Length: 454
Ligand SMILES: [Zn+2]
Image 1: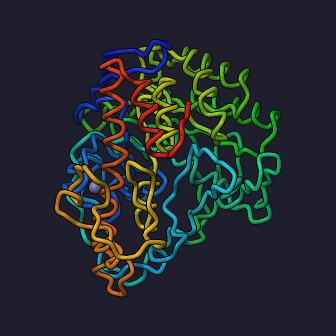
Image 2: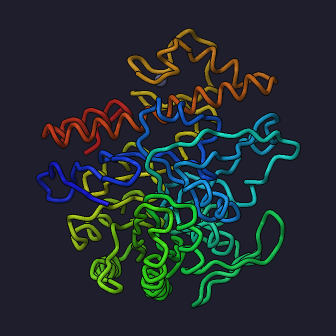
């Protein structure tokens, strides 16, 4: 994998570059669409390409039982994923449907982190359809977050009434246990005991064959103490070394180079973040180092910029960094300014399914509006807006009792929201290269949030 930096911001951290993988280039900063199980829900690969998506992120945990099938297809980029068709599950219709998200969530007051692995129940009686291969660059997450969330439960567990009232309430229903070897857990879908450690995660990811993999790490929650964060971070570093050693064995098995990123944890503490960045930057096995870095953790929104600065001031400039699980425009700007190169999050598509449409002047909730003939967003270049769909027509589909209409809505709204965030990263890239990043940021955030944000 090659990473070339084209331009750096005057703060020395933010940059525009190009990541070259075996399946194509990613021009950064870039937003990766999330296709947890190998495809983005309700979208074909062609739909996805039409949003300008350059890369797709899938999950090692969700795909682990299909790993050998994917390997036979020569990897995720060539695999024809089995997609649910026909009936929509009640879970998909509910307001709390749960595609996993927020691996590295920023949480603000009242910003509930919804979803859980259990909520991703398979719909009964679905007709299986097959999504065409994606063919482009791919990334897989290690599965550590999904497994861990069964236990520490970030998402369904952490309640953020106020910053000082962070509570962690789910230990009574713990389904996962962290040990030195890895994480033992009960599969929420079928109740069987299972285990994933660094070696298992690397074996799974190397069979799935994405271009970029994540080392197996332990994610802490906002409720965890400084002392626990030290323990978890040191364990994550030991797991990183084991991940690297195992990854080297299999990384060329599918006939092209698969790359590995180390994941930085350390919570909200500067000494921990800087220390783990230094340790992972110089870590190597038989002379092989990590190809890049994942910036992980649960962040309070106001801490995000500082945490990224601490990490990225220590990390080597020439290796790419992926900020896990964030997509709000203000978070993307902070991430790009502080040196994150790629982003992913399920929010654009999940929020689309919940009736939230992104526009230049903030998001619109379809639930609260009357039928109107207005476009979703003036000047939007997404396939939905280009085809002339209006807010009123989408709202009618969304509220329709007809499943086919709802599916159509999910597809059209998902394409619009994805394009919105992808276009934003394209514009950020252009503004870094054109040296007008600060002006663009000010203008965009003013329009989007309706106030001047520094
Ligand atoms: Zn649009």
